Structures are given as C-alpha cells and as structure tokens.
Amino acid sequence: QVQLVESGGGLVQAGGSLRLSCAASGRTFSIYDMGWFRQAPGKEREFVAAIRWSGDSTDYYGSVKGRFTISRDNAKNTVYLQMNSLKPEDTAVYYCAAVSGSTVVTDPRVYDYWGQGTQVTVSS
Image 1 (cartoon, one colour):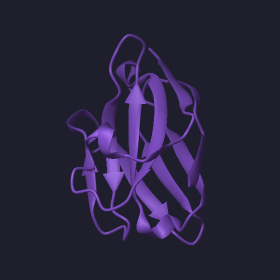
Image 2 (image 1 turned 180 degrees about the vertical axis):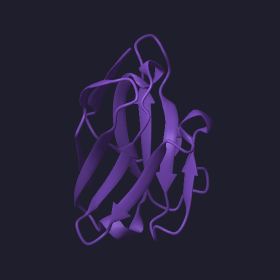
Image 3 (image 1 turned 90 degrees about the vertical axis):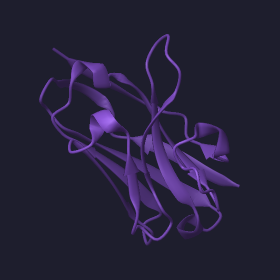
C-alpha cells in the first residue's frame, strides 16, 4: 500500500504561481512512476504531468507545457508540481497518483494509488 497526501493548493490570481507537493508513505516510493491529474467540475479527470521512478523522464499535457514542471525527491518521498503563469482554466482539484511498471503514464486507469486531492482556484 502507498498513501499519498497532496498539499499546496489555494486561490491565486491569473499569472501567479503555486507549488503542489505530494508526500508518499508506505511501500518504497522510488519504484513508482508518479503522475498529476486534475478534475474540474463537470469534467473528466485529465492528465497533467508524470515523472518516471528515476526522475529522468517526464511527460506533460499540451496546455501546461512550458508553464508546469514536475519533479521528485526520492529521499523525501515527495513529488512536486510547480505551476507558473496560471490561468483560470487551470482551476480544478489536483490529484497525485502512483503506478509501478506501466508504460502509459498518461492514462488514469493504470494508476494504483491516489491522493485525496487539493483544490487550485485561479481567479481572472
């Protein structure tokens, strides 16, 4: 079992920045690929970013490329999502998730563990 706890969400004006953190506990964090997803009201959960267990490979959803950066610190069992130049359309609940051994890290269905989510609201 892996327990994931997100933090760092909040209310920010358009153009601002937030840094989300996801702290993991339980089984060995370093073997898991980690992803960030988001879900806005009335919409399906969508992929935002992912990072491989080694930290040497990342993937991003198109609209966040160049604005968001995913990183991890395996020594601290934590994955981060630095979000810059935020837009109102980034408003959603953001979730982190963990999966071991998957080749399709953009698909939420492959993930084994999920956090409870943290709200990000971007005002215009």
